[in-house]
Length: 82
Length: 82
DNA sequence: TTGTCATAGGGAGAATTTTCCCTATTTTCG
DNA sequence: CGAAAATAGGGAAAATTCTCCCTATGACAA
Image (cartoon, rainbow over all chains, first blue to last red; front, side, top):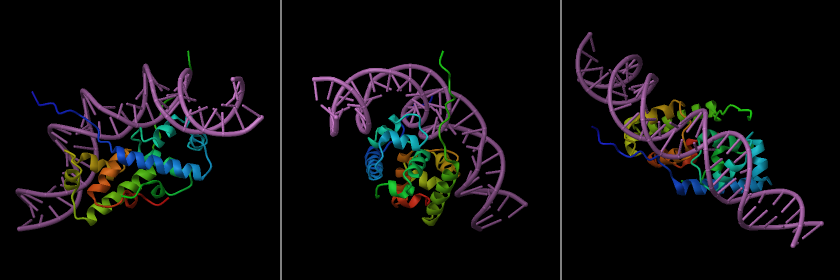
């Protein structure tokens, strides 16, 4: 019987927090509400945007790409330094 | 009975491909193997790194942060333009 | 206050990634 | 060529996100 190591997905809360704040900042710079941004992302619901901005979900890089397209900026611009 | 719309997660294959290529390029610039990079990421296995570089998985932004730390670059540097 | 808009967040089920272990294929080096 | 190293990828179980729908809270104007 193998020793069963606990599976815990890696999650960088500090990074997620900063990333969410950046996204919010850029969204507001564009004068968009969460709902409007969700619409531009072809997302039926804006709860995901909300959770992203609050750093509550460890979302995927594809979604990062989607948001950057909707905000008309390079994905690079969404990321925090370091 | 509600109409059941099919759930399909958003996935940007083109973006994932370019991102993977960038990561590979930077890894090689640092003279690391996939295994060595995995080790620096505290990943027990290197198959994940391999799939990331090949654009086969839509990995999380936390993992992106992890890789950037291991490669000692800003997460920005890993992302493709646009 | 009342109503409206925007943000915050609960909850369930399905989809997908992540983790872990293994093997196959390809590349590199003696 | 042959061995060793590195990359590619199969597969299963579990963790977590994603999607969708709904409600609560907060902010702000009439």
